[in-house]
Image (cartoon, rainbow, N blue to C red):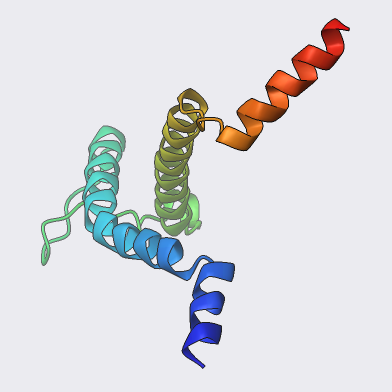
Amino acid sequence: MLGEFREFLEKFNVIPIAVGLVLALAFQPMVNAVVELVLSIVARIIGLEPNAETGAYEFANWWPAGLPVGNVINALITFIMIAFVVFMIVKSIARAGAKTELAATPDQVLLTEIRDLLSNR
């Protein structure tokens, strides 16, 4: 039973997925803070006033010309920022992985030598 459980963990890469999830959850407050900062800057630029209760600039109640576009702007900016952060993380991981090469095993070295000897005949 324990062997099957270990195989399950290895087959579905449960440990790396769990590590990624924990890091993503720890990263979320930082992303939220940056998103709120950008939203407050954009809100100031277009002339919105801060919420009286929270002091934060919010688009949620912004209805120019009677259209509720505030929530759409919040969602759009949040999506673009999160997508950019994920893009940068994936790009850096790919770049780091491209630089590393696995060392050849003794079997591979021997097979390479045999191939080279046969090709020289």
